[in-house]
Image (cartoon, rainbow over the protein chains, first blue to last red):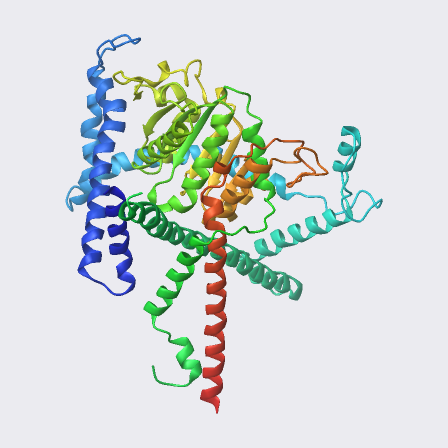
Length: 244
Length: 315
């Protein structure tokens, strides 16, 4: 029954591909209603109760855990939270800016560390050697049967093929960055050329992102088709009809 | 549909196109085939990281996927858990992207346990082997809290011991002795949203990170992998297919000369052949190729149509 209900809902939601219809609307509303209801309950049971209510009123002793005293200071969060709802009032909406401002302030204060954590290692990884350190081989030699010492020797070298890769990588970074030079007018032909190359490389990157997106969407469709044809029809309905 | 061939090709009715797409994504499912594949380095590293976990390790897992990305994320989740169960890991699960995510993760583990029961294998028990810490709204603030004050962030959260009322998660064998995020030798993120970025921002450098992301997130996740902010990742359906093959064959296993999957960077990592390793990745990946081939054909037809229509206009 559960799977059959899922199949009917899936067909209902996909029916919009044919045209807008009441069958689709019904399941859209069912889905939204379920999601909203679930979220409200989850917010209480999984967040507000554990992180706020129990801390405010305290908890009784239970197996392996002592009782905790309530801290009524947590009640002060109520008016503070309610201030956010003044965003709907034309006259008093300035009140809502107080909690929003504090949250923004807390968030902004953390961004220096966040920025460095995110981009510091990436900037570091961008600085790659573009000159080979050995000409013993043009490409990275096979490491089959090498001792750990020989392996680390191979890995410590920059071979010609790696240097070419690194050069292309660096060229891509520089040309894409140059595309975003908006502070002054670019007159040099060389910079303009690099700038144009940056634009094309960006487009290639966007193409790759779009390709990944399409693959993901197709996978979601394949999963739904598997659900309908295999999980429901082949493994559910057919065995039931044939009495297996 | 009036007009010349070019115009006709450009204005194929959408319902017909959708019908063709549905056929292309349905029929191959009934005829399983093998697609030749070489796992990518990021997934090999991901697998190597999981297999290198000492038995009994405690792993923090942020599970941020729901039914909307079941096609990719569930396959990754199941494969990861098969490996974690094999490593006898203890897993603390929480979610920060969607209130439905903890329940979805719980259902996926229950499904795995039912399969294990049918095969008379020991189950992966809630409370003793894994705990569901629940959902945390505001992912960025939640991850920041977990990174800086794990006891405070998870404090007060309860889960269900067997046949017993809910108890504080820190009493479970999974979180005993854990006081900070560094106490986990690995943090896994299975996500279909931006929460992986928050994990890099707040947790990187404190404990190794490994991600399982959806296909659309692969380009941004590759950046984190190349700059060594994460130790490996499993990206999209291709990642799931790679992971299933790695579970089956290992890396450089049994030896480099005869191994199906080789790596110069990694040592020998054993696989564990089992028909159950072939899951969602193996089932969906060949079908994806039919869908992509159809799209390529449609793009070519559309362009040919445009070319013919332009030529018709000129003449």
